[in-house]
Amino acid sequence: DVEEVGELVVEETDGDGDSEDLDPLAQALLEVESYKDRYLRAAAELDNFRKRTARTRSEVREETLRDALLQFAPVMDNMRRALDQDKQGVDLLKEGIELIYDQLCSAFSTYGLEPIEAIDSVFDPNLHEAMMEVADPERNPGTVIQEMEKGYTLNGKVVRPSRVVVSKVVEEEDSPDGG
Image (cartoon, rainbow, N blue to C red):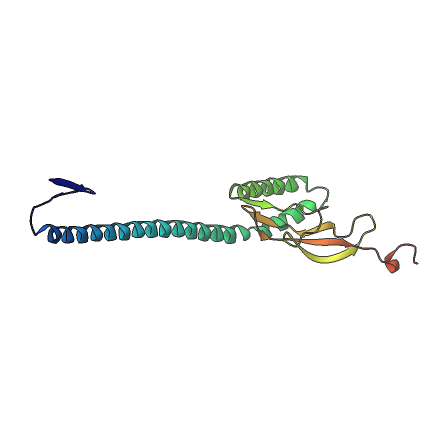
């Protein structure tokens, strides 16, 4: 007789040797299962290691990129300040600076660095850093009324909050009535 066990084919013999022949076979099958289990665990561990390594590489790349791009933020701040100056006779210079500013913005955007729009928005401590509060009867308390330095996000994460001036409640002594 021939009996199939897994992928192994075992011939059964007549006589006293039956149990002795099956014990080594059963033991070999158990060893095969043990090695198979070890192999599957090692393969899963290797797969997890690869995923972890890829994730770590991605995080390191993002941090490096963030640090590099943030070195240009002060340049953009100064260019924006120069653009905000309205002096006659410097229209050509202003136009040139505006082109450079737009190019920098476009380049940053390519890498995922986007400016945070702060003016007239509700103060959000996750996006803004309040530099001062000013009483403004025309605006709701907690509204960003001035942006001192632009904030930025990189791929949706804040890398530099906007430094802003926030409106506050007009107190009695601050009111124009004097009373």
